[in-house]
Length: 326
Image (cartoon, rainbow, N blue to C red):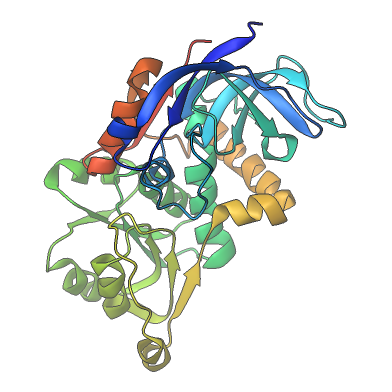
């Protein structure tokens, strides 16, 4: 194994293409409780955009390596690490993996599902864990309920559609353009609405949504509060719109609905046992063909900055994955 590696680093805060650079740096060492991975593929996530802009809830000291989700091979284990072997193909999550090698906490490492190739496996962990915890842990989605998914053609949106359909819910997707309608339908949405002034009334016409999965915020959240069903649950996943909406406690009281926050990384830190259980279930569903990450494009490692910028533009469908050849 070489002493140095290529890694993308963010050297200032701004738009991804302007602040990300490809540098030669030392290969990290697996410290106590850590595993060193040779990277196969890195999935691009919206937090990568926010990290570049300095708007993420965690702000690593500059310069730093972005990337928060990968598929790779175990090449070294730190002191005290058990349960993983050299050569294992795994998935893991940690800020700093957009590189040819990455040292990650052993508790963040899970076996890569055999049913998924490297790109799909890299795109599984965060999006599907987020959707799983949002639907099954936070909102307790029940068979036969109506699930409203915002940004239903995006990475976490398609995951929520697939998992909602697998749970026996009626999935209604909201997308930003007609070009994204079929992607949401292929992911399991039986009804797909365009994000315009009419979608709220359309959901009301369907009887409202018992569960709303919202990674968008802004007007999407405001509209959801108007069309959520009696005793409905709105799961706040993120704010891809760039607008953090106010939560109207008076409306929640009058309409008997709940607003539930979901920061999945907190489960990874505080309840890794639940994350492991969810991963086992997602692996089973992948083996059965019930879930499969929608990979919109796979790009070369040298194109990582442009891939993050594409995600920032909001026109992508499914997941963008960076192929890494260490």
